[in-house]
Length: 128
Image (cartoon, rainbow, N blue to C red; front, side):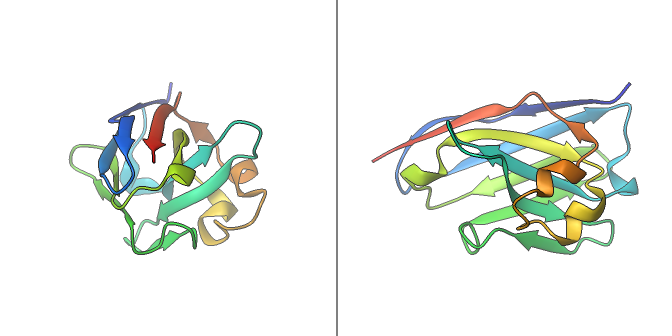
């Protein structure tokens, strides 16, 4: 049974930083594309960042230059370093595994539909 557990969310002021982590059990990170998605109240879930098997990464335009996705295959852990946070980054952040077609189409508005495994989410709140 695949289980993804996020941690590291919280409340921070604009301009601050947070680092999200996602630990997996029953799943090997090195075997597929992984990613982070987010969903704000009243909005669709959107792709934030993805990292493929070869280590190549992709980002939503809104987070480029501020967020960095990485993974540690030995620890089976995925990370999202978030810097220069803005109030519009406020959302529930979800770890995702086995993105399938979504890995290469992260900015597609339905990219969430390609994901096979989800974590339970961690809340990020950025105040101005």
